Length: 257
Image (cartoon, rainbow, N blue to C red; front, side):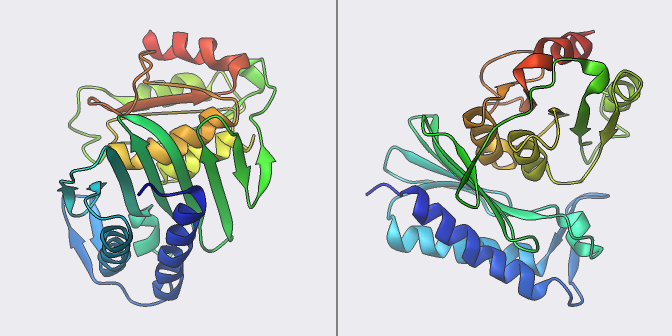
């Protein structure tokens, strides 16, 4: 049995309730890396989601941020980020979400990203468009890089990696209306889908970071690829470039230089 988009919405809302209920409490923070955090709420949200999926959709293959890979025997794969924006969450900054995607034979078919504090549910089904709280959304019509507003993020090993995103941040900040850093890749992609940002790029991601948001952005009319222009942005090494068609090529050129 395969899930439907309402199934993903229901799961995302329920997990979002867990995040919302825990938001204003003191958090138990564990460090996976120097600045890579995990809280008790990450685990509670993920445990709930995996339990529900395994109960309702047995033999599912699951890729989740905290527990890694759960092997399944059917052709579907779930991509789960139970709390995207953990650093924000741990510091009581209200920018975070739940991200859930489903793929069949490697093709993303369903995606849901839920921001519980704003009660914003971004959804998409392959070939059927993208929606925010049930209303269709589309990317901006921006065609000039100078008039665009962009968003990006930085990896947890940002001071060690050879791929320095700060140089791209500086370059594009000087060629656009600005570059923001919100701290949630899933919301970054969804904000491109909704026309709030004109483009989003980020290096060194994981599949659960961008699976749902990538599909939602594509269904809203964005061009979505890896940062080097490869069509496959879920396979390693993960990176993403999602932009309104009017500036996609211009952004790609800047990121290739």
